[in-house]
Structures are given as C-alpha cells and as structure tokens.
Amino acid sequence: MAVRAVRGAVQIGGNDRDEILAGTTELVTEVMSRNELSTYDVISVLFTATPDLTAEFPALAARKLGFQEVPLLCASEIDVPGAMPRVVRLMMHIETGKPRSALQHVYLRGAAALRLDIAQ
Image 1: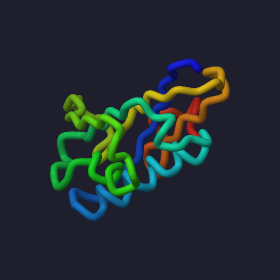
Image 2: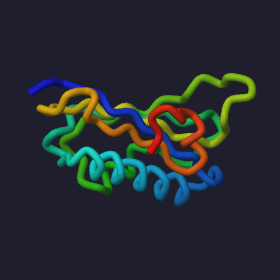
Image 3: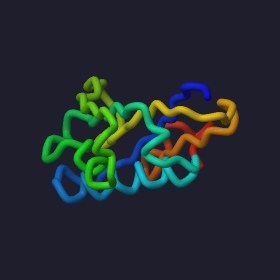
C-alpha cells in the first residue's frame, strides 16, 4: 500500500454554520465515494477555510460522517487579494494500492474554477 494525497474544495454559500457543514459534508462524501475509500483508508485530513468562513470548523462535518479515529486539522487559508471567497479545501492522506493517476480530486460548486485541469 502506498500513501497518497487527494485534494478537494467546495465553495460555500455564506458564513453560516449549517452551510459550512453541508458543503464540507458534500465534499468529504464525494472524495470518499469517487475514490472508493472507507475511513479505514484515511490517515489524516487537513482542512483549510478562507478567512471569511468562521462560523464552524469544517472538520466537524467529517466527525459527523464517522471520522472519529482519523486525525483532522483545520487551518485558515492565506488571505490573498482577489482569491475566491468562501472556500473550504481539503487534503486527505490515504493508504491505497491505486497509482496517483487513478485518484480523483474533487472540486465542487464554484470551486471547480480553481482547478479546471482536474475538476470533475
């Protein structure tokens, strides 16, 4: 088994606790589904949120999905002028037999514009 990293992002509608949890839930669920993962495959997840999202920790959504034994960390994305607002990003470290080329990185809603080269 190799250690790989999967990236993803979702743009959130507003700085609202329920919206942050719903968007992050959608993102984590899609990453897990598209890469055929279970929580046992996940080593850790790093979440970042743009500075305009402060109503809730994105990691709470993963906890609610069953990530109790997975180390999770939230951080603030750097505040670059002109950057896309209201974005939650993740980097999920996994154990998998798949090559890097088989991994599916997930960019949802407006965040698809961040990586047009790999967004599905």
